[in-house]
Image (cartoon, rainbow, N blue to C red; front, side, top):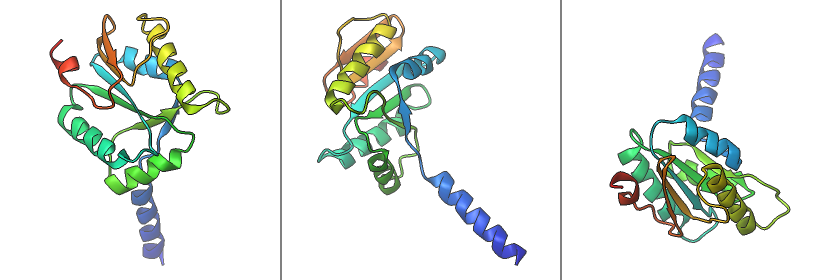
Length: 159
């Protein structure tokens, strides 16, 4: 009987460990993570409900597998439903931290994304009124951003 209980506990431990739970994040929290690291960072917004969601997550997975030892990645889902992220993560086995946007859930998601981006850029002492889909932070003095959904590693590796 002890073996049975041990087996059940072991199974649940493995199952829970295998699932990557997305974390709700606010601009200040993300800024603190970026500031406390001595590595370059990429912040990428994405929409877990879009048609190309699996292709996008697969592309992120490839970037992480290739560059995560030297670059921090922050993939921030634009959603109120972290279950969408969990579903994709379970299907594609993305073993890296995923986040979803914080803020006032009564506001439109795209408005919240824009406010999040603007606040993060302000915290980075970069721009007031700025907006991005992808943010490249070589260091706190060397920041670049654009509206592309695809990460251009040349912007972080060769600047």
